[in-house]
Length: 591
Image (cartoon, rainbow, N blue to C red; front, side):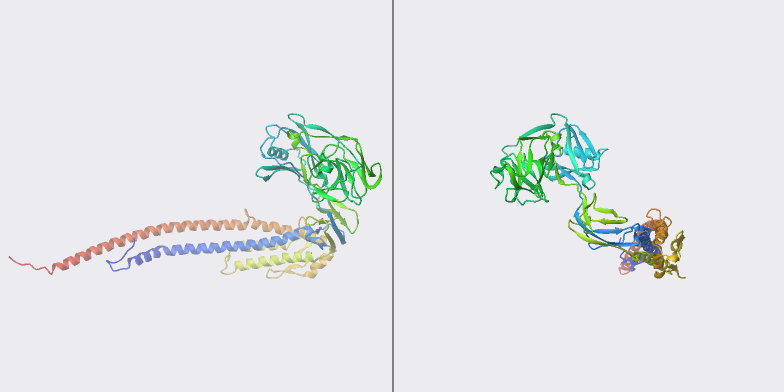
């Protein structure tokens, strides 16, 4: 309601506002002032907590025994080949490191399948690693999709450290990926089907060796290793430039580091893509001219089936068409046999032949100090090569080199103690500033008790000595001072004493951390408790403001009604006065 004051001539709206503010304004001002004071206290508690956390972080550095190692280890290629030295390290000197191979985890991947929920067929299969560990999975016909297979692998009680994942290649292509959880050659994975719930799970296949011709024609200066591959499609029809006098169904091949397959036409190496029906029969060392027939169950090498269960084929190095010929390989024999999974059902899907090895399980390998000996580990960390020294090649690439320097160095000790002293002085200054006259925590006991508790813990002792023996003392104003000469002397006399004093089971640094935690714990710490009390008070003050606002609104409405009634009454009186004044001008005539 808007009051005009036209009848009375008074500014009635201003009068109502003054009356309302006079009655309630002082109360609200007092509440807002208290809320502002509480907010300042909460902010001060936050600053106090921050100073305590900084002090705790400095203590954590000294609580770590490795940070107090008398050694400092550095790497000239720190971003690639990392190194740390523990307090137990004894080696002093330089170590040259060359990365020969990174450790990798074995990853196998299935052929693509259009529907990840479609059942493949029941049966059983086995997953094994190179260390000889294995476990088997059995599936029903009704639960044999690749989603079911992955779930069964991951849930197996005797899982040997394998994780299965369904990978979406595209909207209608899914693959089952089986990965070793740990890196290293001993964790290289292999798959073997065991049975199908329906039908034959193995197919016995015999291949004729065909016309062996003069043998296997290979570039005379070829080096490295490769394979003798059988191809169902005649060599002359499939591979360009091959020797017409060579075997009709065998050819020399190799696989590059990037996975690309190449064949040799006696003149050059040429890229090719494997086809169904390709089969690796023998391993060849082109440089050393040695051979080995691949025996045993069917396996898969780079996407090509390999192995034979029975064969009369023989490969003779440096031989061609019945006589010695350097660089070539003579072949004799007529057949080879192998068993492959039935392409129908689970056995055809879950087999070593159907899965592709997208990443091999390999050990990390390095050379040190110029020696040719390979030092291998199953991970990219070499933490037992030198006692107490850990060399990490996780971020390195093959061929990266570094010089690791291990030296006596006490600078880290001095910096760590100095960091603790500086953090304590910062805490001391913060408490004094927040507790000063007219400051947010003036008169409160909490900051004074806090500082007293922290100081008594910091200025403590244990079986390894007293704080002043390491150069730290307090002046009459409570400020900590560090005598670096005393500290360095103590370190020279034995870093083990420094380690025990700060990082031992009863170490000062550990005691500081526990004491600070008693104040800063996010659930039960003293600062949290005090903050909760203030926040509770803030909520009650907010409730008080809400109640006062309600009373103000009602009081204002009542005043407005009263002044409105007054204005109406005055308006009536004014009208009556005007009427009476008009009567005096009327003439009366006697008849």
